[in-house]
Amino acid sequence: MEVKIGKLYRCHAIGVDGEITGEVMSIYDRVLVVKVEKCSSADERVIVDKLNLVVVKKNDVLSEIKTKAG
Image 1: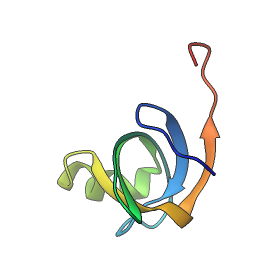
Image 2: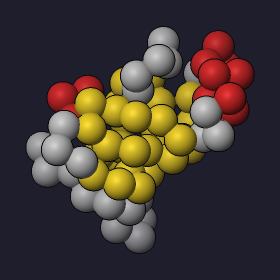
Image 3: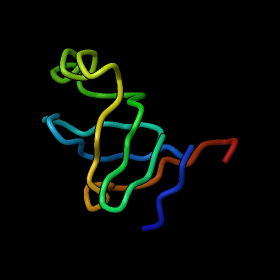
Image 4: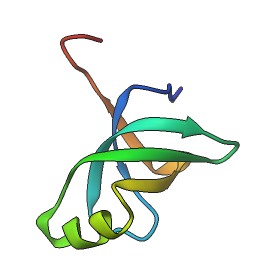
């Protein structure tokens, strides 16, 4: 799957137990930096500690979230 900066994706982040939904901020060779928009209540504390920015392996991107704007 081709991942693009500024798009929303459902994925599994490193150091987070559940799925997150977030916007891709940066793309590197094998990982992405994602700004978290949604997460499970069990992961909220971890996400806040990470300032809502998490690292996601490209292989752990599950799907793109379609929005009305894009």
